[in-house]
Length: 255
Image (cartoon, rainbow, N blue to C red; front, side):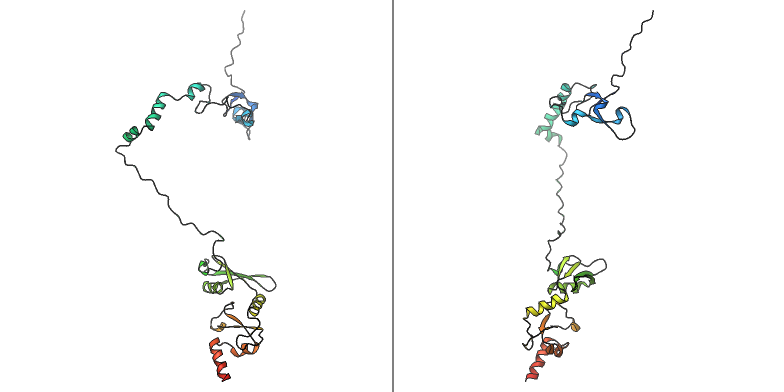
């Protein structure tokens, strides 16, 4: 008569998985399933449900430096540092030992950090600083503004002209390669006339026109510092002459 002996389970960990957080063997259903088609322990996450939810007490966590696998040394032994490690730590902290070990080796000087020039931050430049401007790759400065109807316009100008407009108060610096005209034609005319109180600079009578002190034919620009209020007669008689030349001619006529 033969008796059947039940063989012990040679694979006790089938259907279980080692938690990477607490180091305990737990059923596979305690671990989240990974994405993909892998099955078994490879298809599950490494942290159990209790560790994810933070329900495990602090006392059950392994000590720092302890081995988490059960086939290795116990946690109490693994957590205690060995005598060799203690002696190495003591020797490293001993100044005499450090001096002996470093004898014959020159200590390299600590590398000094390189001081790099920080680029200017946006909005920190002076809007009236014409030296801040730099041309684009095409060699121009972008200038933008608005018409009397409020429509925006854009054009490219030379760097020298852009600097003149900024210095004479007709534009402001937006960024390194862009300026913005401050006034439309109607706003600029009102600005000059109200500034001069509608009085002609030459004869002192009522004036309602704008004249350039340095004529545009000789390189003058339409800026607040180069424009004045003038009456219609003086504006026509001055034509493209300079202010000093026109005033001297007026004195001669008066004499």
